[in-house]
Picture (cartoon, rainbow, N blue to C red):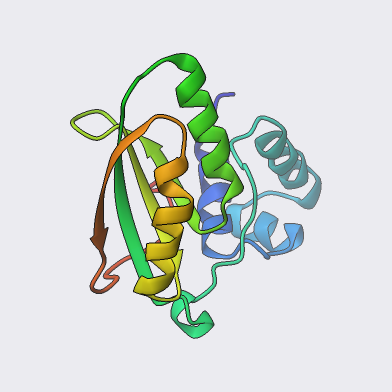
Length: 152
């Protein structure tokens, strides 16, 4: 799908306020309701808009520890990679997971209540993911910036 200037204005506006009504969105980007709605539907159907989310404050929910876990694998066959990725998607504590270049094979951001909870997660879940050879864990001291907004 080709994303033009108007689509980018729609996307930018939605990033600022995903609950905005189509009428408000249309007014902001200079379209009437129906053409704006059509563009919005095309952006959703094409997958440019994957989903709309509510951003929660983890500290207010007592999820005070963010861990960045770098995983190295024993083997790199397709079956192992797909199995690890499928299992990573099943655990809500793993909020982000990236296949990486460089020394580590995967980088995960894991959110838990405390270090003890991470220790249990490490022992019971992470170390048992398919093909894991080693895990290097780093703990975030403070979140400086966290956003879902893309620079469009």
